[in-house]
Length: 161
Image (tube, rainbow, N blue to C red; front, side):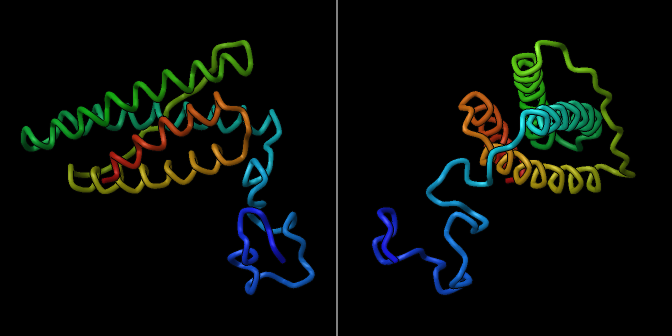
């Protein structure tokens, strides 16, 4: 099977069921959106989840900032804190754009017993956010949604690093 993106067949052709059409594969390459088009209600739920997650992360980093053991740690945590506030604002603006109203939300309180445990939880949360933001970005053709989630995803990768 030849395809204009893959002249020698799909790269996973041998792994696919021979009776499965490319349109039924998990990734509909080269069709967009790659993960299938989200419904508007689901997209709004995902933007709302991003708002809650970013508000939670900003609060979490503000607390970690007070416990940072040295200047280098303070710089990294301060940078992440400021980025989370930017993401929060971007997701709130996106929510308003999609719904015409301000979001109502409550942040969660992340518990940790000491600074090192908090940093490890932050790392785990950042990597989970990257996957969530990637999946939302790949499930819509709306460039505003894609760009907003990409903007946050790249920063979350930086924080994890």
